[in-house]
Image 1 (cartoon, one colour):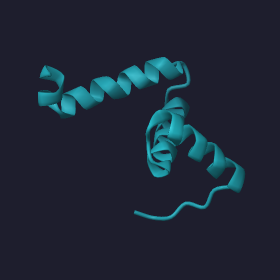
Image 2 (cartoon, one colour):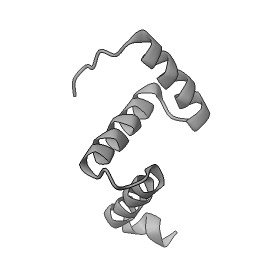
Image 3 (cartoon, helix red, strand yellow):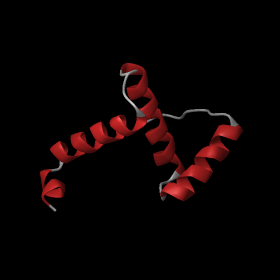
Image 4 (cartoon, helix red, strand yellow):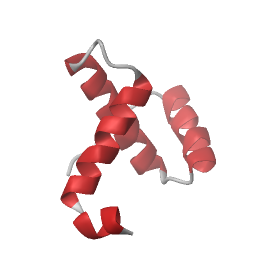
Length: 68
């Protein structure tokens, strides 16, 4: 694990978004970074398609969760 320096305005946006999405600030930043990384690697996918892809991957990693 490491530290990432971000602009104060972006930190404020992450703080606001994390409150709305019920995530920690770190989890919100990680979500944004992951979605951004996947968007760069898959430029034809929409945000919703990327989220669906992540949900499908999570179900494969946790078969008990998928059965619930």
